[in-house]
Length: 191
Image (cartoon, rainbow, N blue to C red; front, side, top):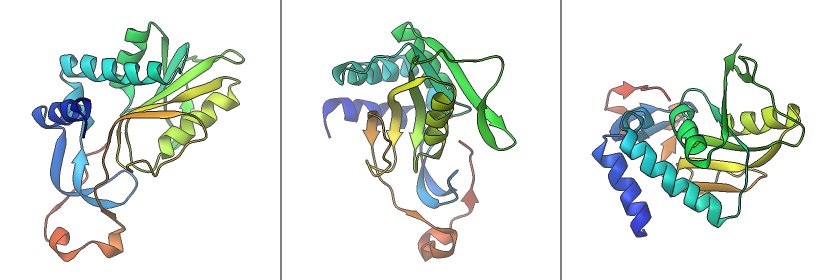
């Protein structure tokens, strides 16, 4: 683990964003670990530093964008801070009839380069929804940026992607939860 990854992990630990127990993830899978990014996002100094590190990785990859799109709720805070530091426009997608959509008058210009920013990715469902939103609206997806890639790189997108921290904790379908984990009360902390 490089020094930046250790710094990022330390931020999550210090802010109590990295939890242990028995959790049901948004994906429906069970895990003994959970990233509760809402905990880190209440500390603006941490959000500012994480965004700074994320932007450095984006710049190193040569990704250019004019707009940041974040899925509500998880990506809202980090997406806004990335946009602020990059001096980019910021919009968000929210659920309507259980599907992410642009609302509140948000639109994209033809070919507008958009960066999708998310907090934690396990399977990447919300990121894929955001990519589809951008394309349907006529924009161009510049890439994806995430704080934590829980899949340790197995979640793939058809655009460049960057994560600050790649970790893979075991996840289990509900009917295959190990006995030791099943003895711990289940929590569904929300994303």
